[in-house]
Length: 497
Image 1 (spheres, rainbow, N blue to C red):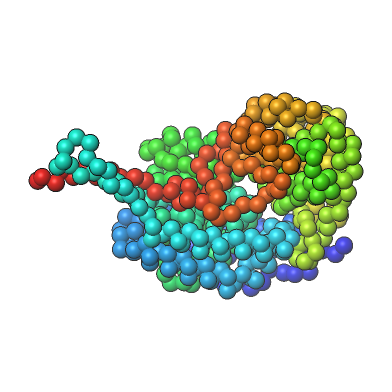
Image 2: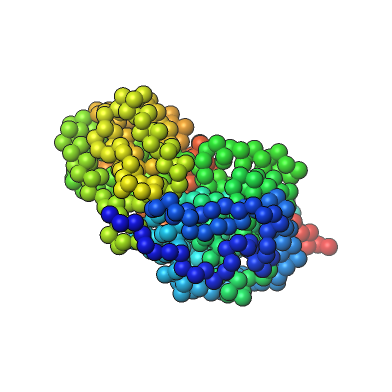
């Protein structure tokens, strides 16, 4: 199994610069970070680590663009729509380069990246349609006939986005497209491991010639840059995707600075799936494995906690094992590859440690996997544990890797729901059944933001996505996401004057 011989294509921008106020500029400091290809652990690029001064410049540029620039004060909704459609066209025109960069930087199978670029282009075109449809309400007078009252929706202001590493370009679109449609200006910080397609996106924003300076800005780096962005008093909202611990810190920070600011946080999950006895076992086993192993398990909504009815438990296990072992682990740029490596050494070691915990501390049985794979980079075999206690660490803590815990057999769906309703998470869940009563009970009683029935992982631009409890608040995608970047003003007019 050979590693990738492909190198990073020539970039149409200098990756050692950052994009602020419509220009590629030299960062203030000299710090830099090496960017790896997770397939081989080889360095493919070096990018700046932004300082608080760089972040300050970016936020001030976005603030000036919002309050004094044409994007908010002169552009009509139709002009913002047309700018976003032009940007979608640029992404489509350059998608082959973006796909290769994304695959090399993340280790994702190229087939998966192509699907994510489809989604990215669709998201900008979808939310472009909202840009000229911002509407308020007329409210009839409740006290006298000389008063007119109405509401208007206005953009919330400067948005500071902190993105995760697992879907660099697609999650960028989740956040940026609705915010631009609403009329906001943006400072965007990608995950420190995966900055390259964000930089490419900034190049395309610039290339359209339709976005005024300061509307979209990029800063790079890790914790220090993220903290400077969260703490900056000129931001009006923070949008964050990442871990629960960091998400809680972000929320506290937005409330403890000079001004209380809005936040939307999409955090972790330990999503349960339930397999009832009336399903096609072979088909369901493949759906479950895909639900867990997609993106190498580095999905906040990954199906990682599986309940299987006692009457089919022993029959289902070999099917689940076969489905996991059938996954193709190969060079990510090969069209037949189905699962890639983990993102970096830190995540690789974290997942291996959880596998050790499962074996030694939780005393769970390994159905398949449990070891490194391919002898290079950050590859780990798809790993299935079974007969796992619902209270085991591997069953309750987010691992963010290709590890599925099949819990002890269950007899009553009511018991499963009761246990899952006590979870600290509430992002997603799935049920596999043809019994409408079981489906209705599960979807009604589960406390989570998305529930899949006889499928898993499908998300769409027009449907909201988000969580309950420690899985965060606010919604990505759908009208709800667009509305989250608007605020309501009430106008009361005495028309007798």
